[in-house]
Length: 633
Image 1 (cartoon, rainbow, N blue to C red):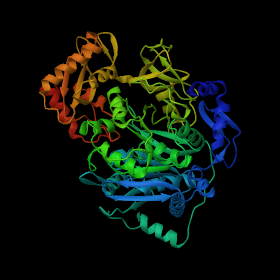
Image 2: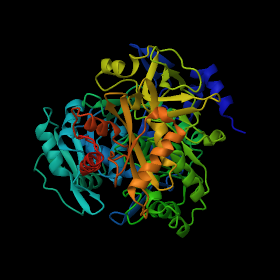
Image 3: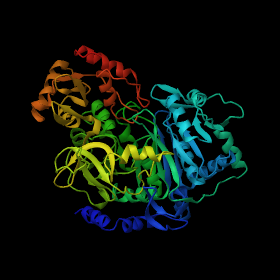
Image 4: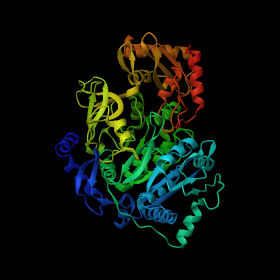
């Protein structure tokens, strides 16, 4: 029996008492004056408390005789490198690099941009900033110079920590030239850089401005320099993480120290059902929120072993690399994006690679980052014979809004739903008039204020934009930007982004529901549906379909069958008449399909190349496919 309903009602009855109890799992230098307070109209948790996130991630485990336990496993199938750091060893590295930062003039409240690949030094740098009260802002390694420059201008970092290069399948991405161009373009100039020289390609360093990571660390070790933990307020920022804004200007999501630790520590047990000492793997990148929350902070707060994976789900070297990592390192739970599993399913639909590995320690697969289509969830369940748990959250929240809480006892799965709201989240479905929609009807998914601990209290240096972006549309609520409905059992269904609700001849329809229908086709690996402007109906849906490997049927046949599927499941009201087979879909590096860009291209709207796009050439392929099917681009 699940304890979910009991725990959720306990939170609703006494929110502050609930989070105060959860906060007992964190070590505080000074306890809070108030669990919650509204300050200048913004939410603040554990007001007056003093703490240090790095201390809770590392020092306290070492002090409690767990220093020999593995803390971080680095596994890089791209370079062939592997290394395991115990809690003792990771603390040694972090305290030393924190001293290096202090020697370069970094102090509490200063910002440090980290522009790094998936290497242990990225984690070390994040924790070192936290240790001395500096605010880190991780920018995804290899981001274009212009995008990095906009973040430099906004964060105004004292230092930038980077690497000579990133390593992708079949190519090396030189980071240093991109970093140099970004600094040249930016109005704000950092005082210097620290560069990790990778053996695959070294960078040219400017004397006096660029400093070699290894040389600085060696000097600090020789001088036995180590930084102590600096107490910060629970409400002080831990990091800034930039997310795309509708205007093209990035939004700097602020994460605090205290509430962040409390919620993430609670989630490791309640949501993910893992124990201290077990191996937890989030197959993401430290540049994204999943990497911050569930590669770095939550597993280490909980005393787990976390995995840092430098690779891809397929092609490094094959579609079995996930199973190799799980088997080799004894992973108990994996958290990844549905797009990773669609890629694996496309390459290995019969699950042949799975049979080669011992997965007996593997208990649970968690999916998030985009809608987990039922076809992919069912395939993973069948192939792995473990629970497959969809859950839903955002960069802004840092942890799950809705989930099936493994640690509280799982609830029955409903395919297409991330299940139910977690404690802290009072989820409501609102109509355009701001009134709550009846159960089962589509609307804007909102959260009644206040938001729980760990959610963004504001945007960096921009309270007004925070209010406009998230609070203005529905007074008293946080607007998620997602659309969906809640069923009679309280299960949440995320159908699409709010701007992916299309209006077909006066009918509001979800592109997500159409994608769900298409994904049921036996030959379809993945798909995207986009609403395109139409003079008669306002908008009409168009489907883009990627086939599974080995499908050799005429594409026209598949396209016709896909149209029929949507008409059967959604009805003629969908006006779904166009489906086109393409080789691949345009995605961000975190795996999200760029539906909005496709729509703008088709509607002849002004658009710019998304900064996060994985391969710009795919947009040319999409344009060619649309022309072939009679659309003017």
